[in-house]
Length: 264
Image 1 (spheres, one colour):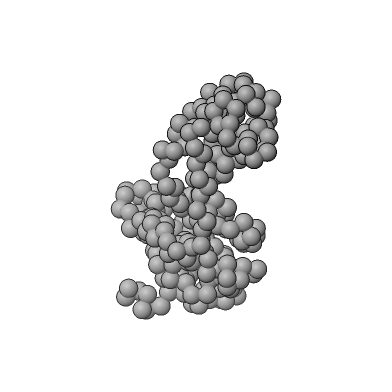
Image 2: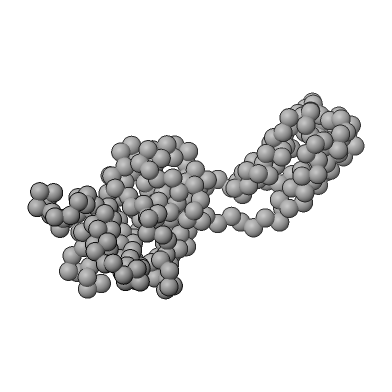
């Protein structure tokens, strides 16, 4: 399991009552003295107490990946009454939130350490979906990402191991049986290290009769040879599934598949 710190604790009932009063327009000292006067015995100011409660709630919301709720507790002091209704609603639902689960469409910054996010962004990896084609069944996948390093890659691998549903979701994109393509063919974005531009069985440019630099372009050129729209749709659907299977399940480009892959 990844070494993820536990979420901040939720404020007690007295602290929440003081904060509700503060959002209603009551002064900091009056709100704290009315509901939780004992916290002032240590010499802390009432304004500091309210600030601590707000930071605690904002941190709790962020740990649940609810930045929208966290912003309600980060508003300017002078705007608190304007946010009273929304903040009160947030205080009611925050304790009921289910433990968040990552989705393949989530940005990597929502789940991975901040130090690795810029490195991955530079390599075109913006979402967890972009990582699912590298993690499963790919050894030393991080070597194609300069600046990532073994330690950070191990952390990412642990994250995926703790959330196997991410990989299963990627596989579901391949095996789903619908009359329409899994995603529009035009929207497929294949990572450079598995796009086939350096496929093991790709002919050299001077020997190739197609104007194609990677597997996607080669498949597109092949599809254009079929004039019937229905034939194109059927072939495109199967070609897309094979391309995704090669990347996600075998961890290689389509033009690098071997006879063993064909058997599998």
